[in-house]
Length: 295
Image (tube, rainbow, N blue to C red; front, side, top):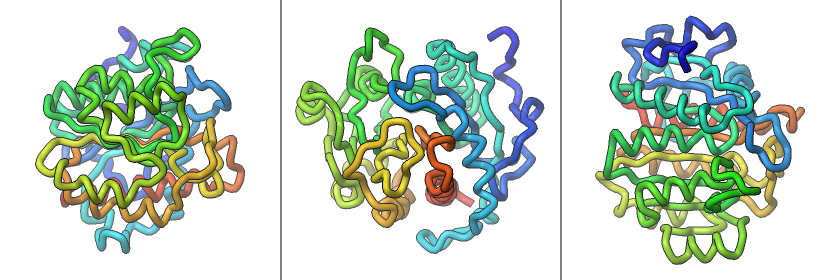
């Protein structure tokens, strides 16, 4: 990491598009949008390293106003830092770079909103959040449990990310929603140890809001929580997922919580030439900014 100065904003190295309505002023921004372009451990279909850039590009088609929240992106200030220069093929060093960068954002008083990339990238960001907020809770929306200790002999895998979180902060602080795929052992572990709500998201989240109130909360959102009819552009699609209408019910709930970090992962643009996955992802990012960042 000697070639990359984590203490510098990334705009000097970023020459692509930025997310709609982002500010060029890092110092004044309350939130920072950053990309984690990594797919080094994908187990089926790749391409998620291209997700952050394409989500930004399609955001131009969005309105700044959210009718779900009655809020407007023009009322908040956030900075698009571009993508982290992650070392190709090195998942452990990539995760460490993400951890260092997000730790720096917390030091600077920023709300971090990360764009993946495969789901392993979230471990670096959540580790930084946990060190900043020892009482952290995690909301995990996904098709998959991601509760393995290793996958194909590797401890650093998109299939192990939530188990790493459980081992760090305690599984009783991890709230899993929408899960519909995993091994028998993973489901047994989740039912016994995490706050586990398979198949659905909005109603069970509403039922536990009182438990989460007042605690710092990190939200990690895998795009494959949606049914692939709505989000086919993801590496490990799993039928039986949620509809976007259910997803947009979630953001008014998140606006009631003390959300301290958010990431959206597993968008693979090469797998969806219709662009529907990318457009849905961009809309989720808009809603997350408006729900979690104060004017």
